[in-house]
Length: 175
Image 1 (cartoon, rainbow, N blue to C red):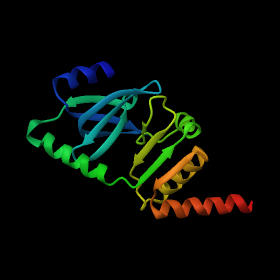
Image 2: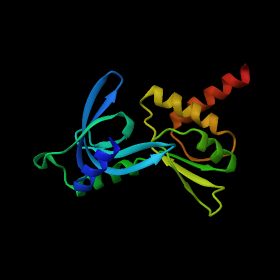
Image 3: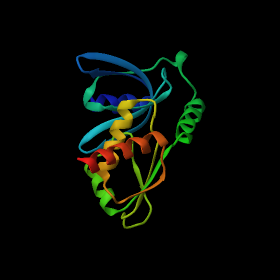
């Protein structure tokens, strides 16, 4: 499927990808932003043309790839504008030291990446958006922050994440 994806991607970035999710197959019209390999897995980072949001899809889950019809396309300019609006919504900013970077490399959510702040890659900055209205996302990010350990410096954090973090710390302290 990777070879077929690359052949079609070389013709055009507007694609319709069919993805196996569980036992059902879903199709997404996307504008392909990046095709990359992470932890031995090929991933597609695309802009979903219907939901108008960034979507990451494992290439292993693809069942079909087709060109997207030209009539229904969103311009590249609108896609870039939408992506820049999403990036403006960053609400979690952390500074990571060497130990936190090591933990980050062991596990991190797929949509989160770091930017190294020195040439030796011993410090980094993490910037991302956390949807504070989803309880599952809040619980996952709280657990993940605890997993990163004490070598993090919080620069900006939503109060809901901080409250969840403090609740977990109270539970740990009282057990």
